[in-house]
Amino acid sequence: MVTLNPIPRALVPVDSTAAQRLCSPNYDEFQSDLEIFELLQRQPDSVLRITMPHACADSPEAMLREGSPEALQAASSRMAELLASPLTREVRDALFLYEISDPSRPGTRQIGLGGLAPTGDILTEATPQGTIVRNEGVRPKKARGRADLIEATRSFIGGVNNAVEDTDGRLSKLLATTADGRPADYEALAEDGCTHRIWTLAAGHQRTSLLEALAAEPFAYVADGNHRSAAAAMLDLDGFLAIAFPASSMGLAPYNRLVEVNQQSAASWREALSRHFRVDQPPSSPDYQPTEPHSIGLYTGQEWLRLTPRSGAYDADNAAESIDAAIVQKRVFDELCGISDPRDERLTFVGGNRDATYLRERVDSGEHTFAVTLSPVTIGQFVEVCRQRRMMPPKSTWFSPKIRSGLVMALLD
Image 1 (cartoon, rainbow, N blue to C red):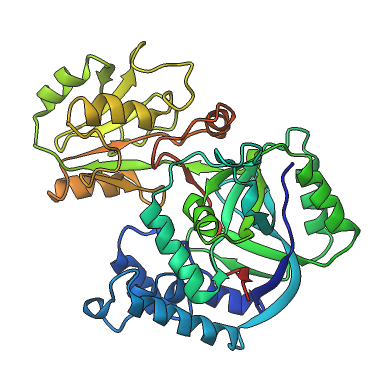
Image 2 (image 1 turned 45 degrees about the vertical axis):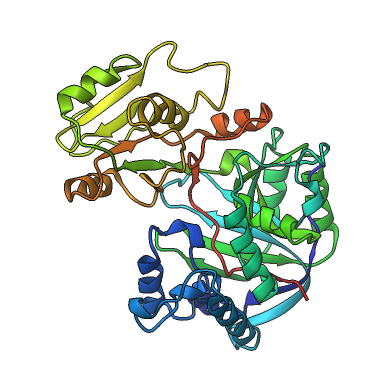
């Protein structure tokens, strides 16, 4: 049974103008602190000034060390300012609907139900009956950083994106009917053209029906926000901010790689790769971004190659090992490059908000040796890994569009 509880005290924008000024991408959607700094120059009211306080400075040189006492104190002070700001208001006993309208997916309606997910429902060895299933490993240092921010601000500003299977479509239908009953309370337009809408839900029959439909789901799978949920558990908090979306409505984008190793020639690449892959030229295009599983792009610095895993290159019965990111990690990075740890600093992970041209340019500039482009993981692959209780390969799922920070915040005090 999947549970969401109302947020005792929620902080929300007063209207759509305020929502536009406050909301932002999540902290982990940026390639560098400089990108965050530059966004804050354009959008100084963004909650990034709180969630990434070290990057809110007068100049790049003046940025603080991430996670430092000075940065956390700045986050605390700015949160106090946000609480007193005319841009926000407080809502009690809050559940909410969250809709994302994506112009690139005109036939898909993505609406979820948001509130506080019980921390005790996270499936762990200590809680084997848990219904919130994580599918990526958690790095304690990263979770600690999010926990420190939660403590400093006494709030959850970023939510955890959970997927539920909704096989009979009941939850999707109820979500759509509820949203269609009245205009959204406020909305904001993201940089990628997606519109994000919020409805706060008063106690009553509609809310009860939605919670009952959600409770009929056996599991919720964490799609984005493993470390935010882990931070709540680390602090022994009762719940964490979360939104549950029907899995069929969720989209995924590519999650690519840049690699820094000793240079090799294109000829040597072909020879080394041919043991586990069929190697040929990709379809004619300036840059190659695969769109189907088991079609992998590799830019050598001289040309693009297309790699098709041979039979035996992976265990087809293992849902996690069948993901292209796992195949590349084992057969390319480990065996050919000597990078056995998928979190090795020589690997740079590039999310779906960057295209294959960006990767080629980084290689051509000399910053990296080669690039790998992967097709998006399918929602079916994602769910099957969760069903098998396996872990997704690190940095393999880039859910898109992503939920934004600052549209609903949960206050702890």
